[in-house]
Amino acid sequence: MINLILFGPPGSGKGTQAAKLVEKYDLLHISTGDLFRYEMGNDTELGKQAKEFIAKGELVPDSVTIGMLKNKVNANSDVAGYIFDGFPRTIPQAEALDVFLSEKNESVSALIALDVDDEEIVQRILNRGKTSGRPDDNDESIIRNRIEVYKSETSPVFDYYAQSNKSVKINGLGSIEDIFERLCDKIDQL
Image (cartoon, rainbow, N blue to C red; front, side, top):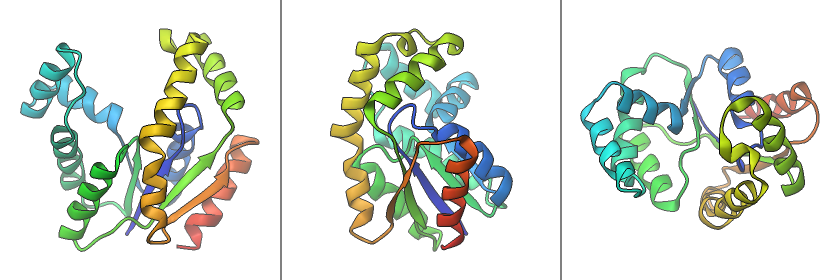
């Protein structure tokens, strides 16, 4: 089973590449954003808990996010593996993912980071903002703040998996096909 963490700052192309990888490798794409929308939209117990925190302007605790992730994995055990997108964002989330997978006699196969410089990310998100309908995609200061939050809070997860030789960076610049080819080369080596 392949268990990939697709990693990189906002606008690095994770969602675009995940869709292509799902098709090629028969993996299930697990995006935390999709999990939240599903659980809250279906008014599940975890969705209700998430709504309470969001309504207070607070971050949803890891226990709720991990519960949602477990539900999704357990409901889809017939796939060849998983692509985790937007998770884990912190070391405690990475540790919880490792524990959960080990309970299934599985582990993270690799964390593949799309390496894209800040200026390229800003331009990509501003371009995306023309059609995404997301106000935060049109404000350069918000975009730059999101990049800084990623660097300070999320990028340590790369180092966490590097300790077990599971982290790798690939060049996230070029055409969608070029980047996809680089990703496939890494995955085929697993």
